[in-house]
Image 1: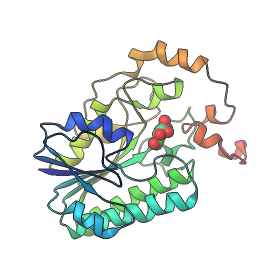
Image 2: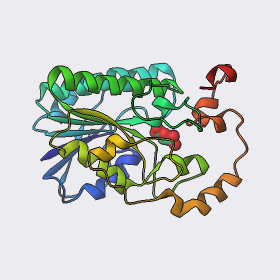
Image 3: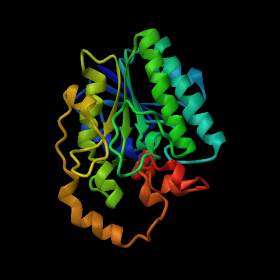
Image 4: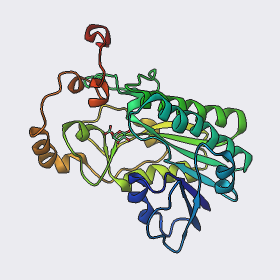
Amino acid sequence: MRVLMTGAAGGVATMLRPLLAGLYDEVVLSDRQAPEALASHERFVAADLADPASLAAACAGIDGIIHLGGHSVEGEWQAIHSANIVGCWNLFEAARDAGVQRVVFASSNHAVGFYRRRDRIGVDEPVRPDSRYGVSKAFGEAVGSFFADKFGLRVLSIRIGNVGTVPLDRRRLSIWIHPEDLLALIRIGLEHPELHQAIVYGESKNERSWWDNRTAYRLGYEPKHRAEDHVELALAAQAKLPPDPIGDLFQGGTFCAAEFAGDLKRTSS
Ligand code: 15L
């Protein structure tokens, strides 16, 4: 199997690359700039999500795509629109044109960030984006669903929490995912024989989880890492942070607090 990873110079890709060694025949890395230190199973193809011709070249001969590329935090609408709306569409179109069978889409918890921390949500609740970035991730999930139903691609959208070797603070104890667990979900997207299209939460085995991740478990997900194993570290880091009267109420944290001019009473459920 030949796999294309977009956004290959970014932080999440850098954590995943060594874990992909030995799993696939070839991993094609694409980004605007080359990532560092290519391994023998890796090949770099320069591609820009705004440039369909470069995406066509990156998708040639590919069986499955891990789409990490795009704008990965909140930003100006122009930047989000270009990378995550037009760019995401271009990526799926290039995949279809090239006959790529599968796409794993890196969605985000920020597609549902305006749910309260006291809520427990699955993947059937309406999206509740907390940022332009979150809106673009909800859009990407919809594009994935469309390309699966209309054109037969197999698509897994992973609403990634926060990727790292340890959870960074109290919020991340609920949404953290270790890179090895993220890889396990990605492998479901690239390999599960019965996948059509699905949305799952990208989290490890987190006792403080806000999410019902039964879709992932039904697809065979078995997370190995527990956020609670790092609870002291996370809470010590939390103690150094100032309280955030808006962000602390919502799953999306600071993404909700930024620019907030809403009515808390009307966002209570
Ligand atoms: C994300 O989607 C971002 O890509 C990442 O930088 C973090 O902000 C993460 O969410 C988070 O919510 O912690």
